[in-house]
Length: 161
Image (cartoon, rainbow, N blue to C red; front, side, top):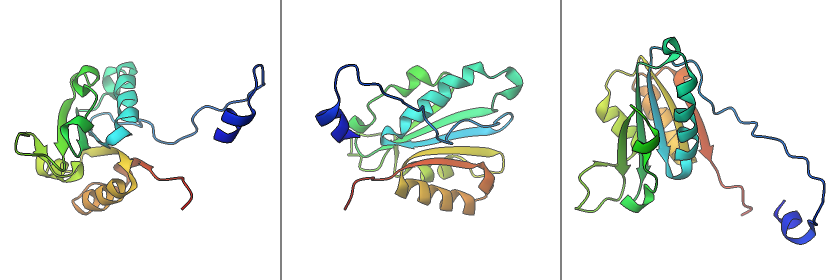
């Protein structure tokens, strides 16, 4: 597609575009503890889902909402999550923090386990690197998260090697 845009496209070309066809969207969460795990740009779909929750009726709302957003350094957490998360609890997590960082350290999935020991009423939406997704799913399912309550969108490299 890039070759077309940069080498062939002309003014007034007719384009046909399809919208997103993904499966990473908010499902039934009423009465559950909703947890978002994001790393890097994985915060974008989380932001969208949080904004969409305002359209849910009171009986469709989750019991609680927590957002764990991970990066290596403070500058990796480039967006003000508190500005769009409403009443959600926000936990920034750094994996390579220096001594000036007083927040959570490590990986988002481990921080979730540090904060919640009972995962039986939790639903997780994870978005980020493929490694984080696989690690989170394995770790959380083995800690008691029902397998049908783990939803994810992994970022994988599509470049040729």
